[in-house]
Length: 190
Image (cartoon, rainbow, N blue to C red; front, side, top):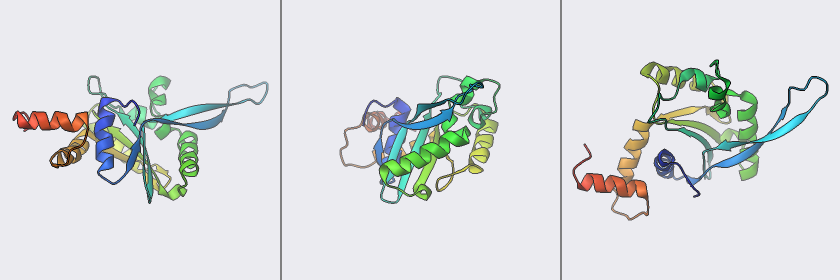
């Protein structure tokens, strides 16, 4: 796996526990019409998926937002309903139907999966508020792409799985697992 942000390492371990093989960020091309009025013009942009994971029956495209040192993930940004277009663009894989459908179809074709085997997930380190979490989960549940709704997984859910993985006596070269084992040995994990 290439260079991966710290929370993404936790997420990758949790995904691996599902029997998924996980890759770091990949870009998928999306062709869009520009706003030119005088003539028709198209541009292709690469949209990045933070983690891509697969096993024989499933292809998972994951957007990972930690936001631990900041406000957290805001519901309006995820929905694409904020007055701030840059904030909305951080979640284009989720809130732009053309982008998410094109990326899901492109990923399915690229890796040899049927579209209904593709799942899009949003992993959140910190939600802006508990209300934001409820709104995000409800909105994502109503967005159907590939094989179903967008799945939302919070940091607590990720850590629960990773702590279970860390309990294994089998050695794995992982900074995340080593950190958890050191904290546990020092009695710092509650």
